[in-house]
Image (spheres, rainbow, N blue to C red):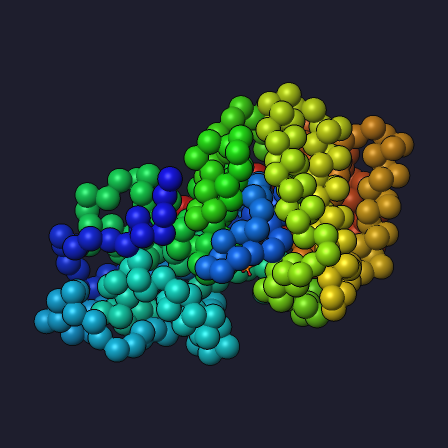
Length: 367
Ligand code: DP6
């Protein structure tokens, strides 16, 4: 079993003055939801997600030693970094990065020795309401790992990706599922060998061809700022009247998905996935204070999907993240019909008619 101290490096064997790296990391969509956490970004329950392909963050990290003569073993006072978003300085993102650096410093003791320029951009519209924290934190973690690999050239690939996921988790929990693999599990689960609360792992069991290139069309229902952030939402799971039962249910649903991924049974898949989405929002509605992130159009879309599925027997379903947008999930072989349905019946419920076509992808890529 891994512990966090396994990610504290021993002495670095190499050194570097300056350079730069660039990584892209995708967003991901949870099927079994992470909702509720303990200290140090430890999830209250295991989750599993599809890695996306098109929605991603691209981050360039330029680094230069503050003082060439300071050995890495000597600590200097503070972090030093500039943050650019789409090429322009972005002061309001800095506190989040500062906090991330503070959380990961013990695992990357070189951080205070360099000045960093972090230049980041998303492939999806900034105001789409799609969370960029998962892809953003994952992309940054990949870059830091590339730097650590230069300082420790003996590092194995397994360790590289595992630690990248570990670090990304400390930035944003779901980010640890945006590093590597098409289907990623995060959180200890009895029947998923190698699963860990500390990092995401590739789903280790068989996956039926029905899920190959699974499609996710993201309907942008509401692009406004969320009234309640995920961080606050997670926190409200402490003392939540249904929390313990919910956490147990996530384990059960993940068990079910193991069998479903193997058999390719899409009816069963739909039941688990839609139930998870509505349970997530039920947890929000039964928090104290209670709140609702779905919008009227979210419900319009859900009802239209149910009707379409009933009328056509096409195995299309929905899931939700912590917001009003709807992810429409379906197998590749019904793409044409589902896209037609989306255009004919669902686009009217999207803000400015906007939606994003995505599908399962492989994870972060070095550019
Ligand atoms: C509803 O990962 O955004 O999308 O760890 O506080 O950064 P923090 O939360 P975050 O929560 C995501 C919650 C979710 C479900 C999921 O992705 O599993």
